[in-house]
Length: 110
Image (cartoon, rainbow, N blue to C red; front, side, top):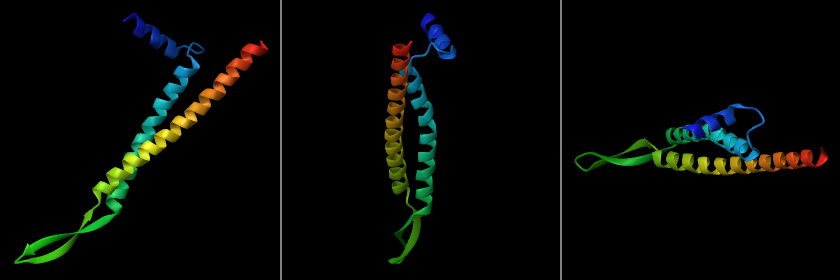
């Protein structure tokens, strides 16, 4: 219980959070909009792309019926999520390196 209170105090106090913890928090907060947009992208692709499936209407008469392409939408959403999270991870790593550089320079100059 004490560690939860201490970690919450560290989160709310300015200057007590480490650079690693700050960039991890930044990464996870930034992953939420990526997830939402990937779901929306998959949904839009699923609804906007159709494929024709053959349906028997009776007495060996077949007709084509357009259907939404849900497998393509799911695949596109998952692929977009993976690629965007990898790009976001790279951006957060660069931010971590830059902040670490500034921190070490401030220590050396003071």
